[in-house]
Length: 121
Image (cartoon, rainbow, N blue to C red; front, top):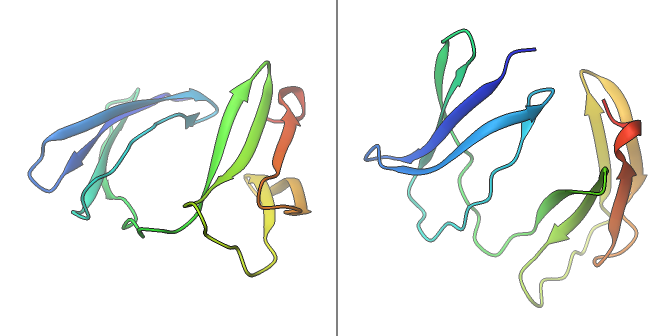
């Protein structure tokens, strides 16, 4: 499998962070964004192919999902601003190349879903 690495840059081309794939094309990046300017991922694979992709715009005050690996388990939780109320029922759907790995309603705003790593591709 090809590995992917890259940088996150702003509109001026300044590098803000780096990333790389760790398992089946998945990887980790953590960023604290303080500006609404457009951001881009400049990605390259192990064969030298490079692609620049504009990242989705940041929506201030909105929730996001977080996934962390701990002791060979993937833990999924919701990051949300203090006081933010999720009004609609939410679902967590994980799939890989069209195969559903996990699909369940999200039961609580403070829930953490743990998935054993040996059940994941």
